[in-house]
Length: 440
Image (tube, rainbow, N blue to C red; front, side):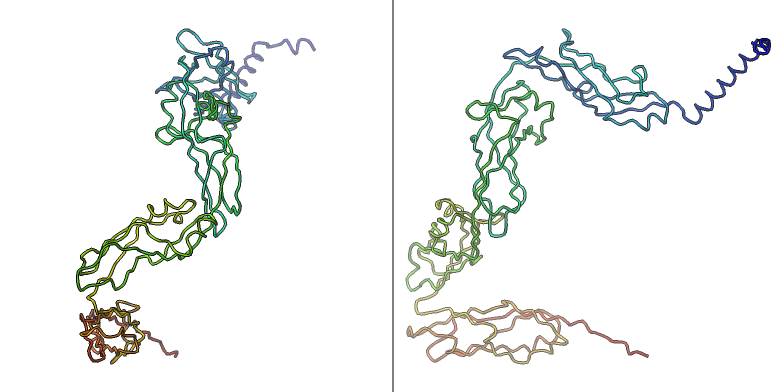
């Protein structure tokens, strides 16, 4: 029996070696060894206090090679590589190991037990830091909101409870990069005043938010120098009510030229939408009186002016235009001769003659609502009303496609004349013909 095991030992060992080589060949063919790169793995620092002095801090060198993130190179079987994720790797920089050149060796670990240290490599292999003077600067807090309150409300005021500014201490080079400190709060569906917690965001001068590791190297304090817990502040949000269709009242200064008078004052838009506190809205008495007067001194024709309502509203505490509203309005002061008048006649009051068949021709008339009739009185007679005049328009010309200027015929009482001709601009277009196929 013993001779059976010891007989041809060399041949048996050779067979075993050949079998192993065949297995290795098959394994490499079906599950070959490959190389994979895992990028943007964040370096975790430990023992930071060991290198920090009272008035100095460290900052990570960031250039084309070094930075806060590294690449891990792994050489393993394909089946194992497919199981790996970026989160499986941990890269640590122990600040106690920093050398005189500011380089800290990086320690690499992998949570997957199939990966050994000699199968992976971290690139670069060190993190570089530099010691800097600690500085402190003051920054304004910008409060921004997301979402919209309930209908009928807008955000009126937004104030940080801890103060309008914060003091930030940290590496001098990092402080120079700060462009804005922002407290963002959500006001979605609010209907009452609220105090909301916000975590401060620090942005660089390009508008990019500082990274988590950069934020860890900063100390953010309130305006009194007290360190903020978790960089949190409280923001008081006050809601104002919306009041729509507030008429605008215009004041004038000076006198028109001799023999002329102010006939009418109109604005575009006619009304504005405001938002404010209950007290401010009550003080308006249903209208907004523009503080900037329109001068008509020596005017013998219409005066047109654009006015910015911002100046008027700035003098009323707790009041402003609704969001995304142009503060500019256009004001027209109509000037007419003394004894003259301007009468507004709705188009519905016009007698229409020879109107084209509406099934064939479609008409668009401008102005679409009313025409302005300037009337002159020879002897300064009474003010006319709509019932005192007769107006007609003949649309016979508009039976074909085209754009027409059609005069409006006006009949006035004796002693009155038209100061200027009245016309309508009429655009005539063919109606699309509808055809129906008879069913067979």
